[in-house]
Image: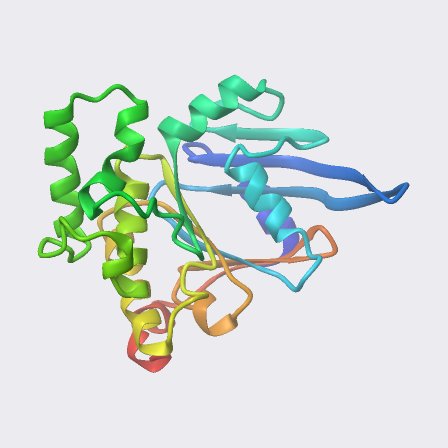
Length: 251
């Protein structure tokens, strides 16, 4: 799919998010850096999208904007039908809390808390009752295969198990989408495959996933790959079902 087709997608109805002519500039040592140059695309509910690009392509800047951690210099960012491009910090923080789930390369678990307690953290900030939070956390732990590790703390878990906790935590607030930033970057190849299978299984349940990666072999498990270069979209291509379903070839 070429860039023109990608731009056309941005006008599609029912998108979970839509970017329109998004630009991001900042000053670095007195020079203006154009991190994003007119990025436009839309993502529909239930998609699994990989965002790729070399160092300096703008993918980290784009991820920060998608996660409401930063704002564009110009352009539109519609999330769940609301233009969030120019909202204030407090409103963006509320949106992050309620609409977006994050999975990081380094897990970002709280070492003093158990598996259940780590999963419960987003629910605490939403004012969910302790009983309801505990029940939901148990369900999510079971969903990612950790029902026998509920009382363990992060130091008692393998890297793959810690990432499963992080994935479960990202689902706690029933987000519109999950943003996964190099989710297997700290894992060996066998564990990498297990975590990617967890993401595939979640997507098959209808969960929207946007994954940033620099590796083609990882990106190809997604059903769509958006490639960036020099701050712009250079390709936006659906992956074949054959590639997506052949995880065994990856591991």
